[in-house]
Length: 288
Ligand SMILES: Nc1ncnc2c1ncn2[C@@H]1O[C@H](COP(=O)(O)OP(=O)(O)OP(=O)(O)O)[C@@H](O)[C@H]1O
Ligand SMILES: [Mg+2]
Image 1 (cartoon, protein in one colour):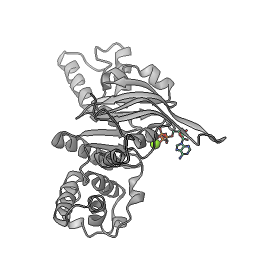
Image 2 (cartoon, rainbow, N blue to C red):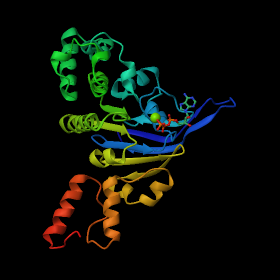
Image 3 (cartoon, rainbow, N blue to C red):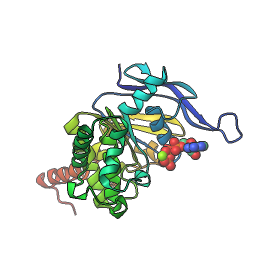
């Protein structure tokens, strides 16, 4: 049994109105405990809608979302339990920071869970550590933080609820390269240290190649592909057809390969690229 699963899941916005939009069309996916799943797809392909289905914020038009094999809408209690077990950090979460201090923003979720003051405090400190927000910043007003810091505070606000599954919708979008790197490495560390399941939505193929254990590709409300990074990125032609691309480093190696250099085309990160070039140079081949 999978930890999180969808069964013939469909969702229509504005059902029964002239503005009806099918956002999810018969989606069947399984997510196992401990995976780091990246969901990719062009704008409007249904990614955010799927994330809101995962934690029960939206209810399927037809089909089911199962958590531990049980329909998350089987009862009100189950739906509420799902909201706590599946933590969702929305796209551009910094717009939802509304407390006067960083501490209060991170504490908001656990406080609402009815936890003791001591437990809330422990969780705030632990979550802040995961996202690299130092304790001396706790009294700062969130508005005084940089874009990347705000994003990390918002993520800490979800981590502090200690969800079993952490969902991050476009966690790096709109950030500068340094901000992106910080967020990616915090996600990686968080999963490695907690063993928890993480789902991220991303537009960046480079980010996906760096951290995902499994990739799900959405296209026009349907699942187009699923598999490991290798399985998905080797279908670069199809990815291009549906408005996606492969990582930049992959394009470089595909070209080198086409030029006759004995290099693999299956290079998805700069680390792999570096190792491949080193191998090539050791083999006595010169890159003219
Ligand atoms: N609240 C809404 N009301 C009506 N239609 C909506 C609503 N939210 C999303 N949609 C539509 O549903 C489809 C899927 O949207 P969704 O936001 O899930 O896509 P997405 O893959 O997350 O896109 P993006 O990459 O731009 O964030 C789109 O056609 C979108 O216009
Ligand atoms: Mg979205």
